[in-house]
Length: 294
Image 1 (cartoon, rainbow, N blue to C red):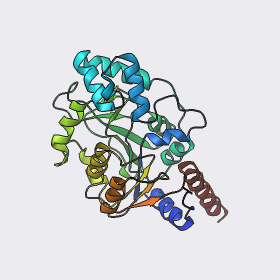
Image 2 (spheres, rainbow, N blue to C red; image 1 turned 60 degrees about the vertical axis):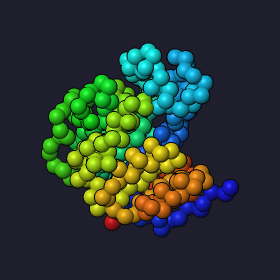
Image 3 (cartoon, one colour; image 1 turned 180 degrees about the vertical axis):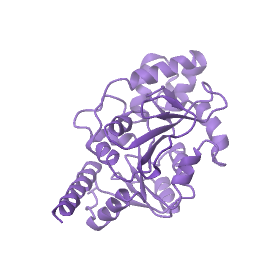
Image 4 (cartoon, rainbow, N blue to C red; image 1 turned 120 degrees about the vertical axis):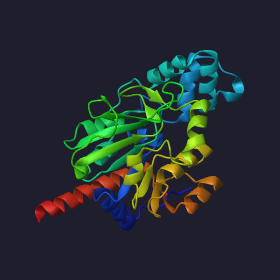
């Protein structure tokens, strides 16, 4: 199937929305494929479950099911075994991609969602001058009674997101947790069951995320909506936001994905991710040069 031609006008709309803070980037594991080198950490659920099952035997029928395999290991080994295997899988150092660096440098970036376990957004944000902090989903198995842990830019635990000039503050929201700074992971069946029992009333969604999404749209990059979990998290995170969103999805969407995007006002961009990201950054450079020239 041929890829969809790049729509320059739509690209400009998205660029403007990102620059002025009206569009929120929502990254998935597919973004790791934009790296100049082969990803050193798992770039999708199948790769990750392969790492986990290489460390512990699981029944053949769940060897390719990430949450079920993690649950089996948790039940028959220990939760610490799951956490250790996850941390080992995401331990290799990977440089942020050019797209990560572009997003981190956006002047009015209020919120950035990263729905995977890598730390590339943290690395990219650490290189900018503006203040930022982290909100991470945490497992009830390890932090019973807590849904989210907050961290400042140094990785120190905080009770709430940082204060300061809200126009200069960015919240990095990692709903599934992350390898850094504290190895928090939502990955097993029981992790998700706990969250899903409360997510419809928004309890696990940080209050600041609920505030920041109001009236804003989302740009899904490197994401799929093919599994029920992917759709539930996306639905709950963008709830009560704008009615127009975008998704860079060059692969032919499944029937469930088409239905989900139609129901949520998500416009599909069929351009290959690398081509789209390069065009977005080139447009940003062109705009910056035009402004500098007066």
